[in-house]
Amino acid sequence: MTVKKLMLAALAGTALLATAPAFADNYRNGRHDYRGNHFQKRVVVVQQRVPYYAHRRVVVQRPVVVHRAAVVNRPVVVYRQHSSHEVLGGLILGAVIGAAIANHAGY
Image 1 (cartoon, rainbow, N blue to C red):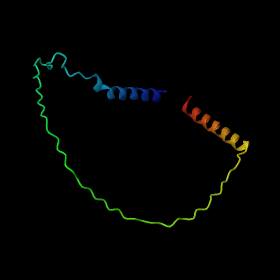
Image 2 (cartoon, one colour; image 1 turned 90 degrees about the vertical axis):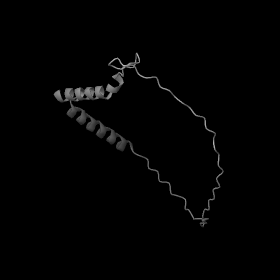
Image 3 (cartoon, rainbow, N blue to C red; image 1 turned 180 degrees about the vertical axis):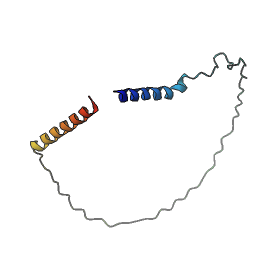
Image 4 (cartoon, helix red, strand yellow; image 1 turned 30 degrees about the vertical axis):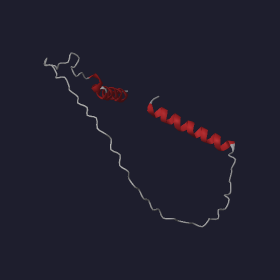
């Protein structure tokens, strides 16, 4: 029981540390830092440039490969009807293994 509590406490602490940046505050609500100094306003200069389009000539030489047609035999379809004993045996085996794991884990 204590191992389970420790694991949950570790998981909760990890989740809290992972979300810590979401709780951070940069103190810019009133446009001043934590010491009371005002930030400078940013000046943005945008220059419009004329786009330059250059014509590129691209030559691609690919080798030509010719193969003979291969003879393909039709595959043989193999179908097996599973008996109900195999399905029931797998079902029982899975239930036993699941019960053993759950019993060992303490559920």
